[in-house]
Length: 267
Image 1: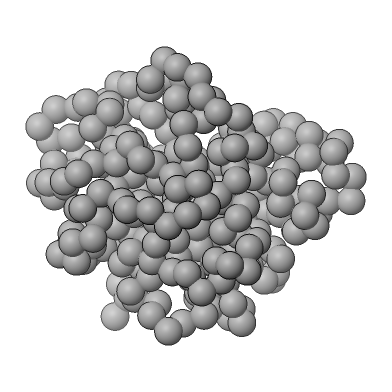
Image 2: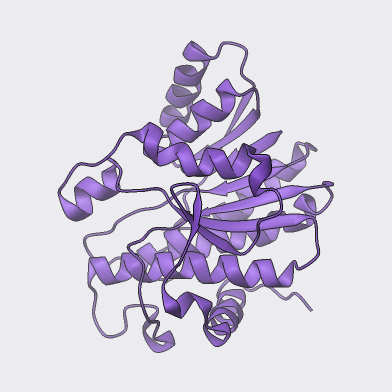
């Protein structure tokens, strides 16, 4: 299978890429830095010499660069079977994206939303495809649509939790939109894993990268997940997300706001 993984130059994304390469899949890996991308490709090839890997650079704090990533991928003329939206950040201080959006929301939520919709027509050309969104159990339990851009001040933890609720709301909404289509959409919590986000945000260590990649690899490769869509997974099992994630009005409103932010017209 051809698999695109965002945020694949470190942590869970990097390990996920390695393990999928070990299983014989063709990889398209994304990162922000060409040097890190080259290092990651070399690291995978040192362990899987026969792996097929292409790299794509884009800063997810820029919707233009997200669009360029999609355009560059589509220009290759290669099929895409699985999209794994893994890239994420924890921003300690308030900052804004190139487009004027709060950076955590822009990078963790809005960029994968935009990338997915840009690649969706291409995914639909496959007999069967999967979209896997990396969320977190650190997700908000409510959403105030009036303060998506930190209008009432910034708290790093609240911003991160909001972005992860956004990932799940998008997952559930897109699964509804694609009902009866041959594309599954699921979200997951990778676990409490020793990544930069955990160290920067919570000042603690956690489980191995291998453990963090397990549910992503399971959803990408297991036939047991082929007919599962619109679900949230923890430890390879369906689990309950925040109650706010199941409210259709939340799903629909965030979808409409996001379309406007990305200047997408689906009509």
